[in-house]
Length: 521
Image (cartoon, helix red, strand yellow):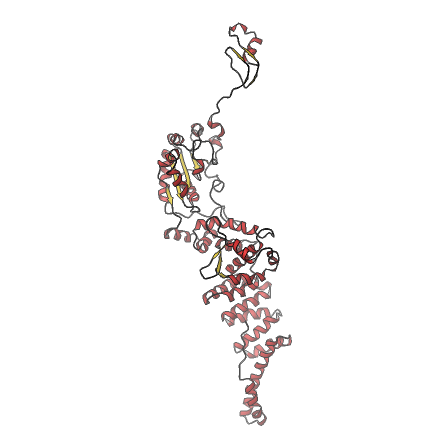
């Protein structure tokens, strides 16, 4: 029923305006001045642009806002670690801080530009915390939000400090986004706008369409270099209290710290999911092999070592048959995020290196799988030079010594590694630890080493035990040791004039002329 009809029903017919409604269909209230008839009529009131924007009171405060939800890339997070590692100061911080403080006083746009994964968003977020109050309200609209009514929303903010946060600014430009008119309103209201933008996107919008260039044309961007300066690298290396930053300083290789920290979680998740039979099980296994080589101390692994080491993972190898070695390697080496593959070519010909963050992530997680015991010996044999072998030995001690009491096989591995390196006394210590539990291989190896250390009398009981257990090398070594001892005593008897000793000495010397090879690897 129209408004005029209600008036007639209430007795207001004497007003003198002959309103009537007839025919057609009408939607929404109708204000009449005379007759309306026929057709389908629809009337809409214009909705203010601000009606879809939340009131300032619903914007999060800076000290409670979630930086990851607002665009800062997540890093690895283990139990007990903070959501993000400490911020490492960049060379542009002083310039950026001054711009943010000025924008907080007078309003205006501050734009941080840089290459992908250069750390733009984290740097801009750190500038907010450094220069604005923790009670500042932060509005971070999703891309494409209509910002034309933002000034109207802000006029009712009272004394609240506010900032407009536009990560990836290109998603907020256009007729309904951050236009010169909207920016001018924000300047009048003294509301700062802090934005980030990739270098290519900035160039395309800054020197492109007039209305978009107009927003960017009024401010000079703060440029963040992809490559870190020596001062920035020193500041990173000084952050030794956070495990993630320590790992970035040591394991980033040719990559920057932001690339290392941001890409790592993505690669880890992709690698984990690849183990499924219908995904990339061979690729998953090859990356696991490279990770464990790196945990032993070898950052670069020959292709054939990757292939042969698969035998140390019988369970994974069963599933891996669904994918060929070459296909798995190709998947592992495919470059992700424009930065790296899970595996990348090493510095030596036909070698492969795993992305450093994967090594730290797997090795430092409580649920991370242990390195197979056989991998330590294989890594030692694969090491290309003496320094690399000592690195493997060092890492083996760090990893295995705390576990040696639980398994004599661990002591055997430590003994074998030290014997190969040439540290015979340390090797004998570990072989003795395993031999005392009855480990027959350790018994034989300890006997060999004691002979090498000129402790034949101590060696004989161990060699006899191993010989009686059927170890042929121990039988041979024991025979040579006993023959040598026999030669010494018969020689002394011959020197004393014993005739039978004099006859037996020459053939005995012939038997013992070649000293036994007593180094067991």
